Image 1 (cartoon, rainbow, N blue to C red):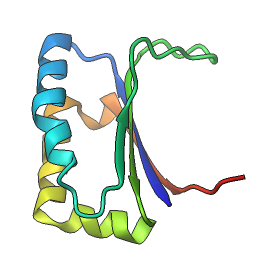
Image 2 (image 1 turned 90 degrees about the vertical axis):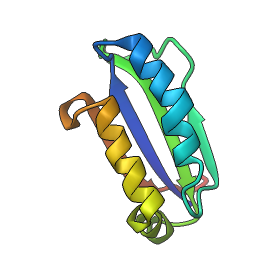
Image 3 (image 1 turned 180 degrees about the horizontal axis):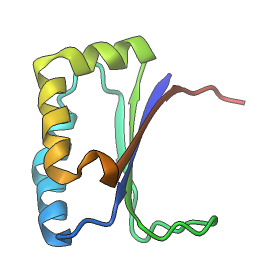
Image 4 (image 1 turned 60 degrees about the vertical axis):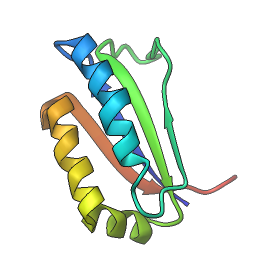
Length: 103
């Protein structure tokens, strides 16, 4: 299984972010081909290493990294990537993709 973790810093306009994220971005992302699960953090996000600017963490799950990458090549995938830039610039978000294994 593959996972994408998206970490958003606290936005300048929290009410705009929340409205757009929950009403536009999540419904769009849930249309990604091959998405298995979409989860989002509940407030507060607490850092045990001193980071204080994390507002929201989202995790998207796919069958494999290849399936994830192919999904983001589709029209819906491109729309998701463009829409994310409405929510946060590249320096306001961290995005990680990786395979996961059960241990």
